[in-house]
Image (cartoon, rainbow, N blue to C red; front, side):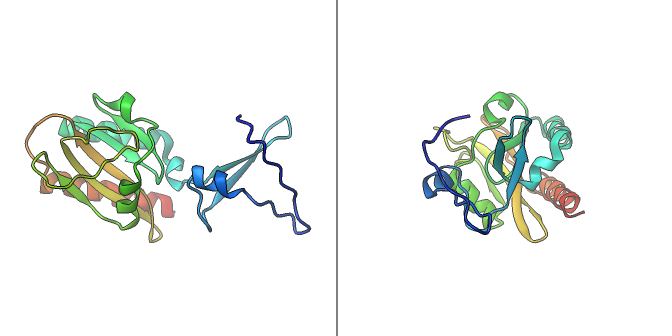
Length: 182
């Protein structure tokens, strides 16, 4: 764990204020759900709740299926980072933080398709210098709220992503959303 040097007191109602600097650095907004864990040493651990994390190994199986079907990188994200990835860039994608513009597109529930001829591109990862040449992405929603996305990405020129890829991602997205609603 990393010490912050910040000390807060619990008020008479049992509330604890998370400092603004920490909320900003962890992208925690007002009304965001927070998970609370305890360990054997009596430590309390707070973690931003992401419903998509509940999918665990199943998300890994889905991205492997997408990778095998379309022969390109595939990923499933929550609202912060890549949870599961398959393909040549798996190590680059897995666990990587998402870029602010991409998170905004998920919140707006925007599906995106582009190739290397597109005028504007969305950078998926926050530390990504070059965008992928081709991208197809669909947001995942559960109970009407955006909770993540399903992505196909390619760093090489290939046949353009089109309706079959988009429809497949929409089907996966709907399926994931329904699983999280149950």
